[in-house]
Length: 200
Image (cartoon, rainbow, N blue to C red):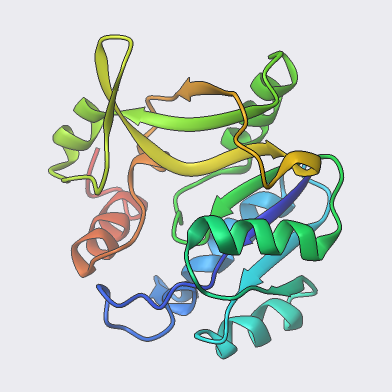
């Protein structure tokens, strides 16, 4: 399975330049995600970029990744464009570049679950109460089988049907590593606390 890292956002809410390159304890956000993918069972890693992030494109290419130029018109359009540009035909993991706490073990667990399921796609979520414990207010949530869940920014899709709506299995993981994506300065500080062991 290959992976496409979505790394083309402006980071307007964070206001610290190109969001994938924002520094977290001495490393850019995207570096944490790419390192976790490299240590997982994922094969090739692509970075979907836009004209908004020339520095991120350079970083990805210097790291040996294939940078996929996408139009920058929205997440779904950029994802479709990126997967098509890569010429992928098998299931592909699509992951956000702003999930610095994600680990290779979590990525492998997601892939293992997908391979055991009949659905063509899989979406990952965290329960709302996990965000509440962290003092976070998620951008989006929805009700699923009697509980509120929050999308975590990692999905697996059938690349051959990337332009179509796909039936997906909702994988709900109570993992703090998936509950914190960096959109605000407060999110960055929360990641620092978790990584330094100051928050349990």
